[in-house]
Length: 469
Image 1 (tube, one colour):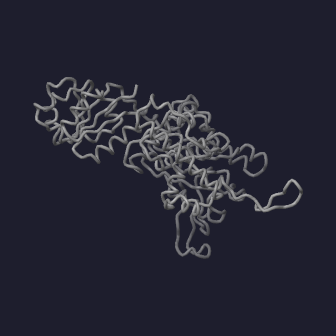
Image 2 (tube, rainbow, N blue to C red):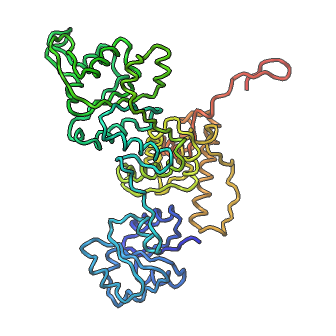
């Protein structure tokens, strides 16, 4: 049953804004700006929840008992007026008073006496969210290896969080946790620059070396050296790296003095290094030096149930940062996210959740906000050319109206783009809508202009002749 809610607020614009938020969350909302109007709605509509603004909460205590609501009364108030609101509501049945900073979703759940479902606390390693058996197995092995000095090779597809695990190992491996964590992206630098970055160089060692620069292995002294995408290191440099790691000493490029260093080595790769060894592109002795403790990070498609946890985790992060409001997922959206194979793993999920969070207009992210690539066969959500019959009697007036409007908008945008063969400028002009609003409607209903290409100017007729169409 749809919860009925009455908002009593002295400013109608503010109350209407609140109603839109609650309507999108499944609440049937009514608005009153005065005491008498609220009283009439309470008697005729019998709402299950009454929301009071700070001014309403400070009404004369003799008036408040007249607000005979069947359910809880929630006074949304600031700290300064909290005590006053509590006193005003005393003796008026089961009432709840909350501070204004509490999120709308938690406030309403509390008011209806429901348990507020919170995200599970992150596992022992910071930032690694999930409860799947595959992730638990990886975490258990990582925790065992973290306190040792042995080299660790992190294997896994791109986007599975290899650097995050490396940072967690460093943070949890005393006494090196207090020292530097130095990451080297071996795939981002050409051979000459990678050698100079790793080992450092002396002044005058090559053109442009105007000063002496210590290498990253020196900077990681007594800390952790993380070699990301170690499989991309050129074969010619692997021998020098192996000797340096084995002897814990090296010479800078162009230098003659031996520099000693003490580092704990963590390496990561998205390639099959054993296969690279067989192919001759990676040294076998360096592989054995790095692969003391191999840890495989499972791809997201193998982490059953973690997609929902991660999606909610990222959504809670980005809702306040990017939109300033609390948002949630529709159940259908979570089902789509769970069924998607996620070739880009956690990184892809994180970016898509942020995109939906920013572009979704309401407080609830629905299937309309899903990117096309997440839908089966990359298809857009289909809408009929004319609105399908809706059993209006089963919906509130506002909900039925909203559904009809959305169906009309989607069908209209597709129809006018088809008419003008995907030309947005001509379609917007014909619709008498400015381009900014036109593009907003395209994004809202996931309509792609390139899906309506221009047809050929000439087509073959049944007589074999070419005719202009």
